[in-house]
Image (cartoon, rainbow, N blue to C red; front, side):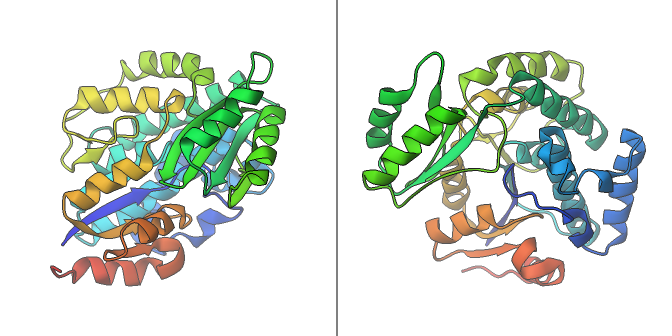
Length: 309
């Protein structure tokens, strides 16, 4: 069976997360490298206070994801596919050999800074479970306006949709969704209106910055956020990394592509289990693991001894 490594995005962070990374030489080396490149210990980014910053969150998630991958790589494990959700796509791109860690670290830092500067307060994201996208769009149309814009953004599962925009508008939409059949309608721990047109200027700035970065042809197939397709050349992946911040993430479609290509072992990099839980629900016959719930040793053992189903 084929294996896919999944790299989580914003919302999976937690205080002290770096302390839970595998005790592995490759992890320590990556942490030391990141700290040297940033001229600051990466352990400064994972405190509860620091995680109020979008930049700190995204740097922490990116570094943790790549550090986890490096531990697998050092043990001789190479996945058949990689995919990352939102900022997780940068970790996936590093794993795929498309972009060097040092360059990706600079871009992730810039990405977080630009997102914070664009909407420092009053904006965010919400999630709706158990409501059809067309029914939710009717509610969004009722409350979204120029002063309080709201957008349907990511589709993480057939019945899981996210909202991005101004906080008051999102809360109105969530309230009505909850009163009209949604199984759950709540705010997310995300402080920016990600994956909608409000962040188009951020995408423009990232496009310019990425033009100065050397990209390589992927050595591991990479699944894009925007297109939910396997991307085989550096031009398409560069565009995906730049534009995903202002475009909807088609995660369910992307993970379905992995399944259709033969993936029956999904392993989620640290931290969190958001993506692995989605995979469990979507693909009940697949083996799904996460570093968060299963630990490095168990994930490594299964990856080393996988057999065809």
